[in-house]
Length: 488
Ligand SMILES: Cc1cc2nc3c(=O)[nH]c(=O)nc-3n(C[C@H](O)[C@H](O)[C@H](O)COP(=O)(O)OP(=O)(O)OC[C@H]3O[C@@H](n4cnc5c(N)ncnc54)[C@H](O)[C@@H]3O)c2cc1C
Image (cartoon, rainbow, N blue to C red; front, top):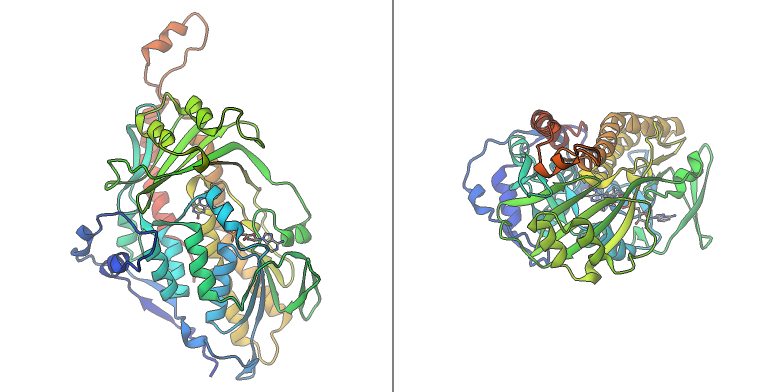
């Protein structure tokens, strides 16, 4: 039978259960190095949240029509995190789904540039709602950072500026705890779960054609596929978006980002998850990524760079960050030159319509944002779930054929329900980039007659004000980020 469970079910994830995920230890290479056991014995009264019931019940139902209802055929351009999570959700519901990915192996290079990905509690909860088994594998492969101290610090002194609590808002709501996971490990888990038959590699989407009954996708090698819905999950330089809304260059953020992965494990690893070191026109993010490795990102305000610095990236970084605290200098120094990469950071202005007709966008194709809050991938995952919930309504009501206008309405509902949250996160990501790099701990008296006062290192009066503001505002923002996914 074609079964959709449309009733919200009460889902309670005890913290004990999450802890046990952590320790199942599938022998995965990306094991977390945390002392997590201290949390296991605690009996935490987890909150609850409503999710729709999904799961493998949908599998094995391969008739085109069941109960007189046509199976939706979903075409997905792009097999990044967004495309794969959507495909998983669609497959688990028995939809006919196909992912067209230009080059699956690109994540091996790209993943190095972008480093591991932080998955916030909200995104992990969505993954659980989509597929519990896959969510468990992701938790096991990742490294939990949300149960340690995370926050902002002064780049010069290394002293904490403000700290974030990622744990309490998650635990009190029974949500999984924020973690990081290697992009390649994440891709492997998702591709395995979705299946090679659904993910078509070496399939570059170059065009699509839509009429009132269907949409047809056209690949570079001439292959064509028809479906009821096309989702452009093809990233910041989305072909689908260009065709829908015209090709426009992405905005350079004014920052280039060096990233490094090092085997150096700092002594504070058991207590600190990640730390963002602040400075003027530059900032530095250091995160534990498990398995005895640290990932760091050094953001520096400059024109886009297309070539390596003449004396190498490490020398350049030590010029830029050499006077910073020992944590930063040591992390750079302990990273081999060939493990340091550089990329220019781009985003796009928000657009407030993500689709036309049977075609919509998701993730970076719809709303690419700056990476400083680590939210682009999480937003893509949340998009997937909202989109599938709206498509479920089409499948539930469609008799015989999925009416075109029902599909169009579902896609419009999806973007409407996602727009506010995504817009806030997009704006915050831009603001964060400005704020993080305008940090000036001491007064600067310029080169005039008072220039000698600069050597006195007088505390900048804006710093305590900024700290109070952040101490009030950040916890609220974090709670909203962690728990306020606003889905279903
Ligand atoms: C330095 C850095 C750090 C980041 N850290 C985090 C983080 O910690 N947490 C977080 O949530 N986000 C983070 N992000 C953002 C995150 O990487 C993106 O938001 C996320 O990858 C978006 O997923 P997506 O599936 O929409 O797009 P992508 O991951 O870009 O996937 C798009 C896919 O489409 C494919 N594709 C492109 N064109 C075509 C075509 N024509 N035909 C077929 N396939 C095509 C590409 O090969 C790719 O596989 C970071 C970004 C950067 C740059």
